[in-house]
Each structure stands twice: as C-alpha cells, then as structure tokens.
Length: 326
Ligand SMILES: C[S@@+](CC[C@H](N)C(=O)[O-])C[C@H]1O[C@@H](n2cnc3c(N)ncnc32)[C@H](O)[C@@H]1O
Image 1 (tube, protein in one colour):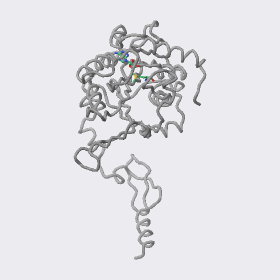
Image 2 (spheres, rainbow, N blue to C red):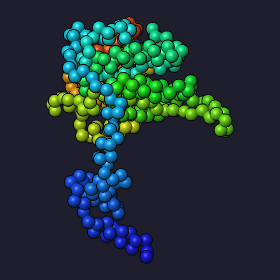
Image 3 (cartoon, rainbow, N blue to C red):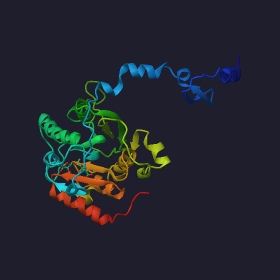
C-alpha cells in the first residue's frame, strides 16, 4: 500500500470509528483532522476521574485553615512600611490579605542597602521562614502566595525545592510553577566546572521560578467586573513559561535585584482581582506595590531598608497613576 493510501485508510478508519456516547467530550487531532472524542477513547489513562479520586489528590497534604477572613486595618492599607517583615506582619490580623507576591533575598552575596545577603544556610532559612510563617497566617482563606525563587547554582542548595517544601508542610496547596525565562546570557556564566569532562560539569540557568500556593482552596472568589485579564493574555499566560527580560533600570533605582514590572503585572492579572489586597514582604524599591497601584489593587509593601521604601513611595508618586501597559 502506498503512503497516501495508508494515510487515507487510517483517516477513513478514524472517521468511521463509532462515537463514544460518554458525556465528557473534548477536541482532539486525528489523521490531521480535528475531531470530537470522549476522554476515555482519546487518552492513555482510562477512568481518569475515578483514579484521581482514589489518589486523594492535593487533600493528602492540604490542611484546614480558619475560614473567616478579616479586614486589613486602614492604617496598613496602601502603605509602604520600613521594618523587619516578620515583626511588622505580627501586628496584622489573621486572614487579611488576598495575595502575596514576593521575591526574597537569595543569600547570594548581593549588595543591599540594609540586608546582609550572606548568611549560613540554616540561619538564612530560619529568618526567611519566620517571614513566610506570618505570610501564611495573614493571607486570607482562599488567598494565594507567589514566591519568585532562583535555582542557586553556586552552593548546590536547591532553594526553590526547600521553599516549596516549607509551604507544603504548612498545608498550603501547590497550584503550580511558572518558569520565568530571562534569556540573560550576560550573567557571569563563564565557568564550566570540569571542562569537557563528566567529572563535575557546571550547570547554567537562564531562568527563575514562580512557585504558587493556595490557602485552603484552589478557587479564589471574586466579582466578574473585577477581572482585568483579556482573552489573549489569559490564553498566552496560562502557558507556564514566561519569557520576560530582567529589569534594565536597576541602577536608576539603586537596587540590585528588582522584579521586571511585566512579571508582576502577569501574576496580578492571572491570580488576583481588582480591589484585592496585595502584600510584598520583601518589597525592595516597590515594583509589586507600584504595579498593584496601577492596576487597581490595594497594597502593603514592607522592606527593611528606609532608602528602598523611600524610592518605592516616590515611584508611585512619580507615576501619577498612569497605566504604562495596555
Ligand atoms: C530580591 S529583593 C526584592 C526586590 C523587589 N522585588 C523589587 O522589585 O524592588 C529582596 C528585598 O528584601 C529586603 N529584606 C531582606 N530581609 C528583610 C526582612 N527581614 N524584612 C524586610 N525586608 C527584607 C531587602 O532589603 C531587599 O530589598
């Protein structure tokens, strides 16, 4: 049989295949044509739903949390506060912010104005987790925590796994992970480890992660009119690899490790509603608070550096509330 004949007979066979009478149907591609199919006919895993139920899913790790949400006291709303985050957050009631978006210091040896960025790893995680403990407490039932973490190539410490394990142990639900591709080959990536030898080659990363956790429930309630993500943005951003250049203006703002505004914008629109309260406990020069302000969210930003907090406030004043992205 010729190739064309084989293809035609396969296509014919597919088209004449009896239709599944199952209710649960989806689109699929067969023989180069788009066809409707039942999940169980189309996929390798039969009785998917039943098996999912058997495995118990995220319930295995998730804990129950108090369901009553509280108002954030007015004196903290839309404020940028200088201080140690663990201490400042202790003053807030339980369950009072909708979403945490943050990028902690990585213990990398960067030059921050206040924070000393080289500690032994146990001390580093102890301090970090004292802040994250408070984040878990203050985030609302059905709220979210999004943490930006970089795989640490120099010390062989898998920071992103250790941080994720912390939140899982606290009983949060792992919603997923976004790979932030920075394409920044201008990093000092000239080391090869064992050059041309399997002895100990050096792995190089041009990406970071956003780890996303939910408190109590995967679904966040919100009003339809407070959704500000459009069709194209949604379709594009649920593909969990985001190619976004690193912030170019770090020198201008005097901070060594800023978020690019686009990254915060995507996280905000995809995971929060207008009017939500956004917390960044490592707010730096305020990319999270600025973006939240622009996009109709309320914010609370905390950083231990008075200098960075001043810049963060000034960025909001200078922006004049103008939307930079449409
Ligand atoms: C990676 S930077 C965040 C930068 C921020 N995303 C931005 O776009 O400007 C981490 C920040 O955490 C701050 N920091 C470190 N330890 C802190 C603590 N215990 N409490 C509050 N801020 C802290 C540092 O001063 C630094 O600005």
